[in-house]
Amino acid sequence: MVLFLAIIMVSLFISGMMMSQIMRQSYEDESDSQMVATARDVEAWYLFYNEGKITSEQLKKRLDAIAMTNQDSIWVVQFDNQVMGFGETNTSEGVDLNEIELYYNSMVDTLNESEGRPVRLAIQESNPFNTPIITVALPITYSDGSMEYIFINRRVSTLDASLINIYRQIVLSVAIAAVMAIILTYIFTRYMLRPLGIVTKGARQLARGHFDIWLEVRSEDEIGQLADTFNSVARDLKKYEQTRDSFVADVSHELRSPLTSVQGLVQGVMDGTIPEDEKLHYLGVALDETKRLNSLINNMLDLAKMESGQFPLQLEDIEVNELIRRVLITFESKIDVKNLMVEVEFANDKEYATADMNQIIQVVHNIMDNAIKFADYGGRLRISTLSTEDKVFVSINNSGEPIPREVIPYLFDRFYKGDKSRTRIREGAGIGLSLVKKILEEHRQKIWVESDRIGGTTFTFTLNKTEK
Image (tube, rainbow, N blue to C red; front, side, top):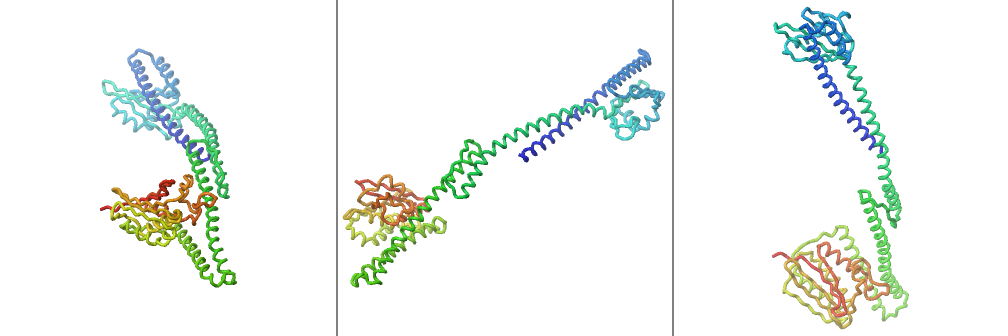
């Protein structure tokens, strides 16, 4: 508010000074014009006097009236170098030509060369009036070449007195404007600070970790936009907090389960609880648990690296069909265990795409692992590829129980495992598909899921086709 008031007051002061200067200049110009008109009027009356149309008494009375009306002092310098004074100065005061010539010496020379035009001079030094004056002089030229002079003298203080009234109006206007500015600025700042106060209070709550807040700011200006952004941030932070809590709980659960199993099996082997002939079997189970634990940790580390930008893409031209064949071979034993019928359908013998080979292998591996894991025994596993002008489409399908429609939007969330009944969607660590989605997002590609009882479940993703 102080800043606004300072700007307003400085602006008003500058405006007032400029207005005052303009008014003063305008008034001085008007005063000069008036003094020139007075000089012409005096010239006319003096010529009447010279022509014998009026008496000296009538001339004096008339010029005294003109001088007193305008608060001027009028001098008429005659042929005989005598001075006729009217108004505040007259000849009885002893003002003679010598004094005038001494004071207006340079002005008389200018008058002689002015060809009858009036001459203006502002005098600040000492003069017969003992105060700064403005003088307008007019030469009277006769046919024989002789000259007489008319001097109209006006005190600067007279102009200042007239300007004081104008200044008073300006000061009054500035004062009224300042008072209105103070009132309006106060109202405006209060109006503006109220929503800012709400935002500040909300920010303090947010800093304390209270994310369940909502700012009630209904304005549509920048403050309203700030409040909307703040609400959005608070909502995202609340969601992040919930996700973090869920993430910690899920990670703890996923790490605790295999560690507990390994601990129990090793303890059983060491204390003899497990028979000698079954030790190798249970040690194999413990090894599988450690492998699952190691895979989970590696996936989490890879996902963290991708999200932090520490896993840059190594793009190259890859042959997608050959990549799928290699990954499929690694699942031969799992396919045999579930007695799955494998169908491979490639629209073209070779499909080339530009991508990071190792990451796309990870994508195909994770999707295929899920497809085999959740396929029904004796079911079907179908892998197909096709291409358009700029995209290669890879689809991996399995038969079996479909994924509930309400679950599909959350399949790619970390540690998401569907409903609480621990259905088949709940199996696994719940991080493999998150890694798949993140890899494809890094490639700026899409993945989607279709699932029903007739066609089974199909995961389809795209790759950029290599330009020929």
